[in-house]
Image (cartoon, rainbow, N blue to C red; front, side, top):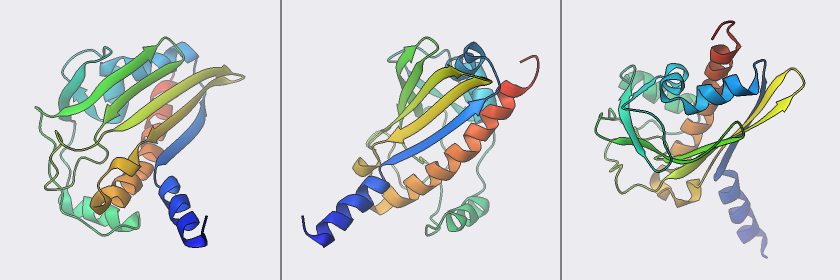
Length: 185
């Protein structure tokens, strides 16, 4: 394989998978419930769903807060991508479709990565796969989060979708940590 082609393949692979791992100081059953109970997921993620999670179900709802375009464009810059106008996600759009719920071990859904780009048609956009793997470890629960499939996202928005979700998963995993590690929840 030529050097140029090898570098292109490596670069594409780098922008196809996001991974986060954390040990949460909470029982496995508590962490799993925070993931698969749509109300609890919404609490730490900042989204209100229209019903309970079930395999095959397209989930709709609304973000708890509206996105401020100026703030989002500044965030784009902070993540190393060119600022781009945003749109608000509407309640009739599918937030995600539940793929798998395996008790206390695995939860997965598909969604449009970074659905805020103005002009994006969420019904036609390729979906990425978000996976949560859980295992019991000394001191709590190990959670591995991954999102894959960015290579199918149109090139014009691939890097932005990847970087926005990469930064987003860092903050969402931290929000989940705070949510499940609070005594009594």
